[in-house]
Amino acid sequence: MSPERVTTELVDGVFRLTLNRPDKRNAIDTPMVDALLQQLQQADLDRNVRVVAIRGAGKDFCAGADLAELLASVDQSAAENEAGARHLGEVFIRLRRLPKPVVALVHGRALAGGCGLATACDLIFAHADATFGYPEVRRGFVPAMVMAMLRRAVGEKVAFDLVGTGHLLSADEAQRVGLASRVFPAATFEQETAELLRQIAGFSSSALAFIKQQLYEIDGRSFDEAITLGAKVNAVARGTPDFRAAVAAFLKK
Image (cartoon, rainbow, N blue to C red; front, side):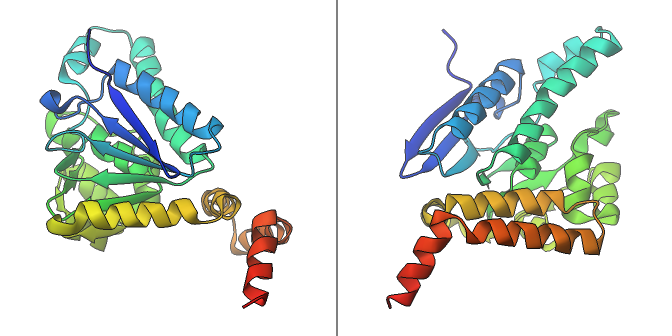
């Protein structure tokens, strides 16, 4: 029996998903995509899940797509390949739509589709030794779906440099261009990221859901439209039990 492609652990509101193909540098294949979609659905439905953390087993986060599947796709029709790509794309869409924060814990290499998976998360916490990049162009391929997220994260010029030259980034460089959220020293990576995840899990779930939804809905709107949307979210947020409880607790101090 083949091992689970994604292993899970739920502790104190933190739902950890671990890509579990360390012998293949956690390469993404169809069973892994299926497992990710299943677990993200579980995260959405389970009220005990307050934050999702994705990481890789072994030395790397994820080195990209499974080469055996890529090779087999050469002989498939365009329609079949599009369907396969859309299947992976559904993971990116579900990560964006999940009303709970998703954090990529990146150590080692996050390359090609693996870097795309990290980019699709709301936050990237990077180990000091992490490497990020989209080297597909060097193999005559295009990180086509990822560009929808990458351009939003780092802007056109940096995005074109990354996908057009295959330039790899260190953890510090990834943070500097806006791809990685934070970088942690190797000696304290596990401890510090665990503490941050616990903090996020302790925040208001409704506030985090509003933040995530509004942040992504702002894209493509005019300034005036974004302010109008913000006013509506502000009004709804004031009526939530979490906000009322927080204000009441503050006034008692």
